[in-house]
Length: 224
Ligand SMILES: [Zn+2]
Image (cartoon, rainbow, N blue to C red; front, side, top):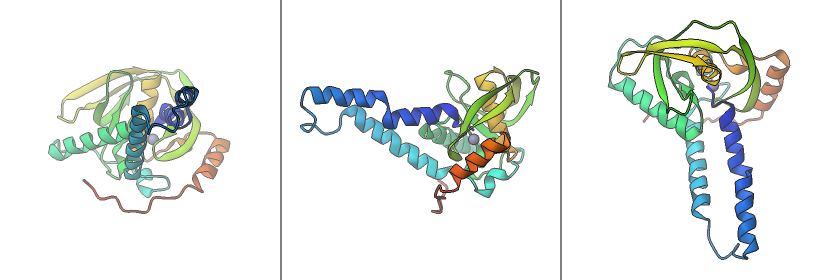
């Protein structure tokens, strides 16, 4: 899903944010600019950026055909499923996203990981949405598979998400607002639906214009 909105903002802040400017000004005031190497904070930021790029290289980018395929129900809850979820959690975190569907790494199984609130990341297998509210809301979304694209998407604001955890136990989440939006974005991925399929014609056209010049990653990524 979504790397969603927030990660894009986040990335941007990291690259050009005020914190950075401020630090720099501060150093400058004291004339230590050229005396020291990168600060611990700058080093950490560079490492996070490197991890983000590595993660994005493992996430399928539009127009990769896997992004338009429908994933299959998971029937076997085994160690390889646990490994998949663990890998997806790591990629979501490193990429700075709030959701990632298995189809985004080319695995056609109905699994996604998501972070609907500050309560930590969650994984759901064979997710089903019910109790969808009648209220809808439009908001900007981004996607880890559609870099630099942000489009308005209208979605219901309230729903119940149910499915299995990776161990095969039943799980249910009642979600509203942001969390509800995140899981609908991820569930769409499992059906091969992208945010550019859910926005208006003008926004879609603009998004495709942004995506066209983006170089497609052609290096094969070996599975871990
Ligand atoms: Zn997405």
